[in-house]
Length: 87
Image 1 (cartoon, rainbow, N blue to C red):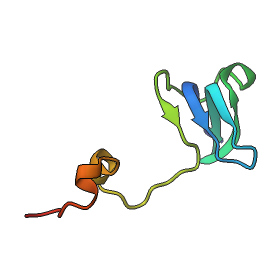
Image 2: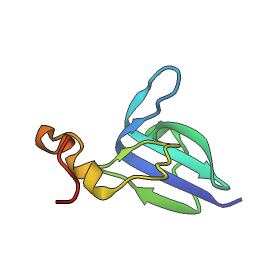
Image 3: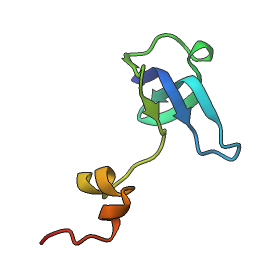
Image 4: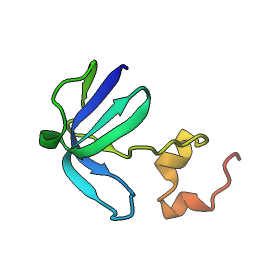
């Protein structure tokens, strides 16, 4: 059962019922399924693959299946929200 540990995330935003936001968070994945989410210090320190997320924010379980880069970059700018995409 391969495991992946994402650790040291600046912030893990769980979007669970408690709306937890975990500073210095970690996510343990086993067989492509999230097994545990918590503070890095509270999860196992070893896994088959360990990825350091220092300086990054993690949104476990969020899979965005359709989005365009230009929407990400301009979606919150008032001058671009109602502008035509192509001239």
